[in-house]
Amino acid sequence: MQSKVLVIEDSKMAMNIVIKLVEKAGLEAVTAQSLTEARYVFSQAMPESFLCAIVDYNLPDAVNGQAIDFCLESILPTIVVTGRMDATTRNSVLSREVVDYIPKENAQTYDYLSRLLGRLERNKHIGIVVTGQDRRSARHMVSLLKRHNFNTYEASTAAQTQQLLRENHNIKVVITGAELEDQNSTALIANLRADYTKEQLAIISVCERGNDMHSARYIKSGANDFLLKPYCHEEFLCRISQNIELIEHVEALTSMAHTDFLTGLVNRRYFFDKLSAMVPDSDRAHALAMLDLDFFKAINDTYGHDAGDEVLIRVAGILKQQFDDGVVARFGGEEFVVFLPSTPPKLAFKRLETFRRDVEALNFTHAGQTYQVSTSVGLLTVLPEALNVAVSQADELLYQAKKAGRNRIVSDIAAARQRIQSAV
Image (cartoon, rainbow, N blue to C red; front, top):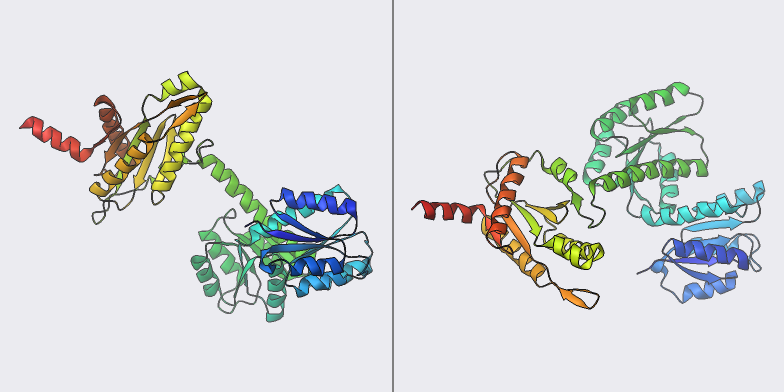
């Protein structure tokens, strides 16, 4: 279900801008031009369907931010927009537990609002640990983080911090102070950095203003960033967001490097990187299959490359659906590979035969002409220790399937039986 954003704004021009930003973020705007109207439209909707509220500080029936209080009382994360930029208004806004405030100053501030909306949605899946802080500081940090929809965790020791990281793979940030009960903070940072790179986990250290040596020690021990006390609401959240966005950018680039653009499957490089250390387990059977679409070049030549792309995308969709417990990669062109962990030979053959039949049953249409595609499979059920050798052996079985007439599976077990029968 599409999340909603309650927009309370009496300026039609500002309202139109905000609505466009909300829709650009893939959200639905529910609008009101006054506090009275906002109370009514909110009462007609399901409160849990709202991601947040965007509220003008000064409204005809709420001139001093009363609409902000209504949204906060309704448990809505609240972003305030205002044409006033004086210190009194700013302090009035930030004295409330708002997500942020945005002055109606220029186009760049609305761009910030757009990014903030996307951030609030993504933050639902991100964890942050607050550790080594005095109780008051920890409560304040957790309050700020929760306004931004982060999943928050608290720890008072290095051991608790490391356990939280082991148990919660959504954690992207650790905010650490000097109040750890079992270890000094630089040791914790160094230990965390030994297990997590800066691109995997951001560590932000908080230290007292006036002690430059502490901040330098934290950075040298492996921290990504530091905050000096006392810090303002905005600085705290901007540093958190910047560090998370850096991690997300690296993750996106890594995903692009590992993913085939057309099919969304992992590519050959990622397949070898992920499974190169594979060693046969005597207690568990693994299977590896090489697959190739039959006469695929004829489809491209006859119907065009767009038609060929459609075939690859649909076949990749079946592979992802049927082998989501394994690793599926596009090796290039019309060739794919499937690794099935802990899968006995008979079950591996059965699953691949189901896939082969499902591909054979697909119908494609181009310019009024209907065509089909089939696949040949080489299945290896006894894997050598070296992955590249396993791939070569499965590829040889695939060649045998092609040579035998295509649209079939040739496995190492069947091939071994045939060799025995031929020898007899």
